[in-house]
Image (tube, rainbow, N blue to C red; front, side, top):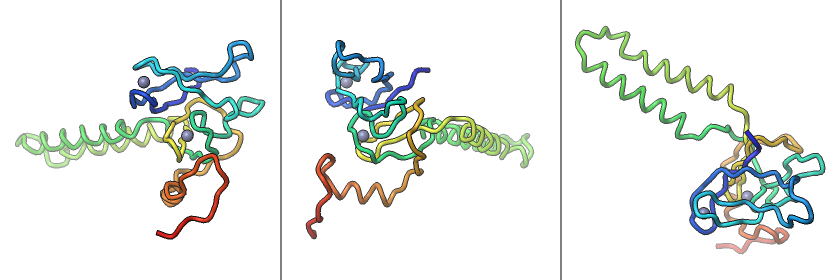
Length: 170
Ligand SMILES: [Zn+2]
Ligand SMILES: [Zn+2]
């Protein structure tokens, strides 16, 4: 799979995975574009988000250097497995011929599947500012895992491009 960014489209708001390799764009083909598969809108990607060795240094969609490490598989996949297991457990609990110990087997299986997913899927890089997820890139630096406190602090400090300034008291 080519490296991709999962970005929320500015015009249709759908979140799509878009292959993005800005280093394949030359001066002639002009700006590296992210094309939305849903509505065809084109957003400008940030080639400056990568260093000379094509390693990710910042968000490819908004250019923010505030990026974190996350798991590549979508959260709903992990939750979905557990939800299915919970349903299976409820169904089994309603069947009299099923021995009591067997009722919880689906839950153990779900935990095992989630564990395997967690260990085997590669890390992705998420953006604190715009939520874009970057998959399949090498990183210029080690990224810290998602930090809720940091995310909240960033949300309070609005401007993305400008230098940080003193926050007005609310
Ligand atoms: Zn779109
Ligand atoms: Zn971003």
